[in-house]
Picture 1 (cartoon, rainbow, N blue to C red):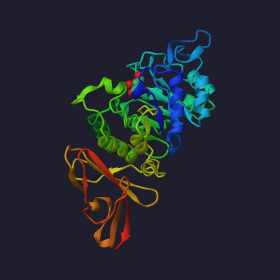
Picture 2: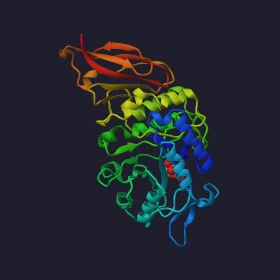
Picture 3: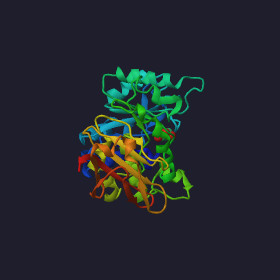
Picture 4: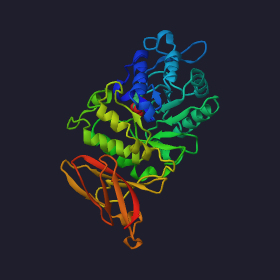
Amino acid sequence: MGFNTWNTFGEVFNEKMIMEIADAMADRGFRDAGYKYLVIDDNWNMEYRDPETDKMIPRPKKFPDSNIVPTFNYIHDKGLKVGIYSCAGVRTCACKMSSYDYEFLDANTFAEWGVDYLKHDFCLHPELGDGELLYRRMSLALRHCGRDILFNACNWGWDDVWSWARAIGVDTYRSTGDICDNFTSFKNIFQSQVMKLGSNAPGCFNDMDMMTVGMEGKGSNSALFEGTDGGSFGTEGTYRIQFCVWCMFQSPLIMGCDVRTVSDKYRDLLCNPDLIAINQDLEGRPAFPVSFDNNLVYCKLLADGTFALLFINADENERMLSCITHDIGYTVGSGYKIHMKDLLSGEEMVQGDFPVVTVPGRDCRIFKCKLVKD
Ligand code: GLA
């Protein structure tokens, strides 16, 4: 859980902004809700290496004297962890110096600077090369750098990443192309991952990209894709859908909105403890679809013996949504009923083999459920 600069700031940020973001994460409740990593994305470093040491060079206009360590110290002093960005190719996506061939030196440098998380992108890798091998290299380098650095393999789902990421030491892996701030984009992302969640388990999770919750059209990835989805951006209902799905699918919760200014309404959604508990559930069991209706009802078994049910209405108009709970394993003959608590409204109900719930247009409802004797 954390924040990443890319969605809102793109290539434009500096030390002062990063410090303000660290302040906001600590002062506005994000850190205490669990958002610990402050990740600085692409364009923090120069296009070349230090001629004497071969180390990467932080951009002096962003980090005075090309020294990024004071920024990292500031982040740590706020009780947060530091994330940095590099790439498996010869240049990063913004054409800055990348780690290809220098994995061990860069891992050691990041450790020396106090980095706790590495997002490792996939742009400009040799076309004839083996993508998996490039991630094996950085993984081994990180495991021998003397510091615990979480490894995010940002290879966009290429090369069947879910089939090898865990084995080679990846902690989280990006499974899709870049998200943008509209419903079509994030719906396509999560629907593409439904049948690939089986490899989610403690130690290695499918990362469906930084969330756009609360961006409301502000930010570099909104502008880039303006015009898709009829030019519309996320709404209160679709942001609720996004956050609930990211929790149900156990995607890393990396915020992409400007945490300094995002409204309290979205801050409260992003910090909802009941939803975060689903995302962080210790057993890490993948959600599975339980509907005959566009695969938009999902169930997730939880470590405390309960289960969560998410009903998504992708239509514009209010709808009654249902699922057949026999698909979860429930039987009427067991003598149980299903007690359902709406985690957003607090409403409680008791249902059986065919719960029907009313969901507003382009919105969702999420329930924590347990079996109870009549
Ligand atoms: C790729 C990644 C994004 C972001 C940019 C930075 O597109 O997928 O998340 O890191 O590069 O250039």
